[in-house]
Length: 287
Image (cartoon, rainbow, N blue to C red; front, side, top):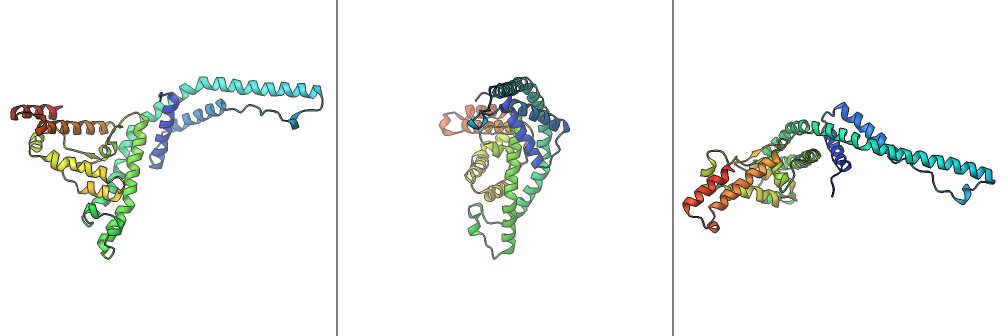
């Protein structure tokens, strides 16, 4: 698909809708420019006169001539509006898109408090809920008030967390950032930075293979079970749960690729000797 300014404008409009849904402030200039955009759109789609029917035929040649002239004028007016509106459409859309893109980073940052509030509920309930593989409604112990209450709270909050994640995605799409594979996971979770001095020791101790990688794998496997998915993350050790800042989704993805590459260096399949493996690990972790 060719990315045109109209295509971009659909994305920026969606971002504004998401911001309003989250109760975030929308700068007045955005709404004012949207009104200009709507005016241009209306002019660009000004309807032409309908085709005449048998019932529209007048009684005399003079009446028909007058009607033809009137209809021709209406056609010219509509066509002129279409042509002139097209001249204004692109600059107005570009202005609107630029205003929304300037607001997006602030909107994304403003999502963090609500995300933290809902995540706190999940974390509080995670200690009272059964293991992840048993986290389905049919297996909840409804006779235990602590368990049933924790489940109901988590069930109410999980969709709200999902909506925040998707609203952030909608906002990020308006500025062309933070897409790619596993974007949902990277939006909410970060593994330790590979440049940290402890990373090499953690990798050699098998932390990536036995602790970190399974966290992401389980998250992916639980896609159709939102409550279990969020409880799983809340219980995970060694990761940071925080809504990604603008551009941070990509940074987190790159960090994971460094972990994976370093792990490949010590894999038996790599064929590396010990010294070569260590050099490869160090180079991969530094990126």
